[in-house]
Length: 495
Image (cartoon, rainbow, N blue to C red; front, side, top):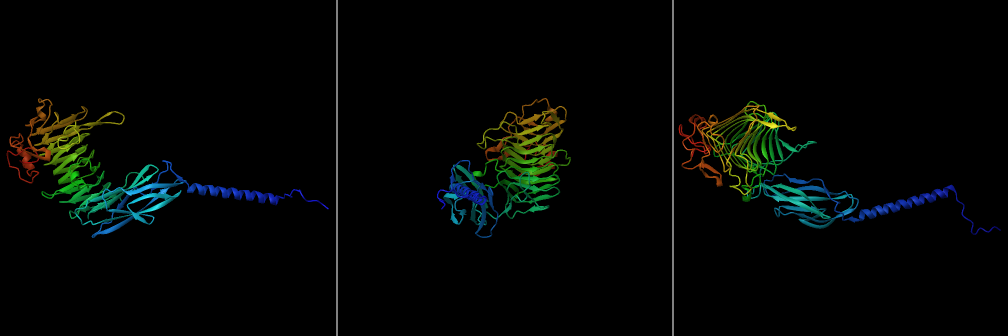
């Protein structure tokens, strides 16, 4: 009789394989368990941030009655561990306009919202506005703010508070900024305001015409771009000007500069006209950049440009004609003529009391500046002819000692002339061939620069001293009145 006690089991290749399989399953189960444990673990690392399907949520539906618009975006947690969003709240710039729903829970403030690892939540945003309410802001803005592990992130909420035409980017190139492309032959009516977000492009070969009385509001950093071969026609009328300004209509924003960017007439744009317009509180009012175009880049009349945080009218090798215009109160130059060009100004008033009429610091640049060249990236001076910088019956004045800046390159023409002007300069009086019948340094005695009133008072050297050929050619002043045949007033206003 055999005694089997203590006899080791017989190992076969099948039992060895079974044992290895069992161990593999056990390892896999443990790994899955550990992974699941990690997914359920909440990280408090400041490096664990959220990502969003969008950074700006537009509510672009315009209602004819009180209504609500709904938009949705996704908040992603791309981390390998869960995160706890300690607070989600509406910032509250315009209380009661925006409401939020997060995964079925409505409100305007939320606490301790957990997002699992590699997961996401849906955020539904609603806004209720009455666009026919003229007391509502043109644009209603707010932010939904997320605080996670000390990180503060936000999604901007933008809704339209009045019935208007809104231009929001509709072209999204693979490189470069998004923009709104206007249809060819666009005509803007004056029945409702026009509100621009971002870049608005007038395509090459196309035109934009703006009817008298139209109100154009530009959002923060907005730009109107008139492409090469395109045309802008601003057709205001006396008593019904076209206005360009920022879209913040609260009283405290009335005089704040830099609220939008610029009207940019790109190189090669053609036949641009601006008539009876008010352009205010941007960065650069109009920039005409049309090097090499012999026809006028811009013809402008009866237009006010004021309160710019940089330049009023900037020409870069451009051809510009302007009459009966006021350009005032800009941090840099009211009128800048860079890289040469051909410029003619008649019956204009250029006055700069920046720092006097506002509290945004003093300026150091003159009212008017001109040069005839530029410096390349390699430091080489490149001359470019200033064919003409002609000022006829113009006022150029401000509190600086020198209000006409010049930088000439002797390798290119540098032609300027002041005909029957009142302007402030300390330059050599012997250069009288540049100053035909002009009065320099003497104060023109503006009525009240503090409230942008650039009529002249009694006793002003501008009174009765205009050149009659020029005043008869441009005989309707900025008030819409007629100038006399003789003894007219220098500047944009007859009196």
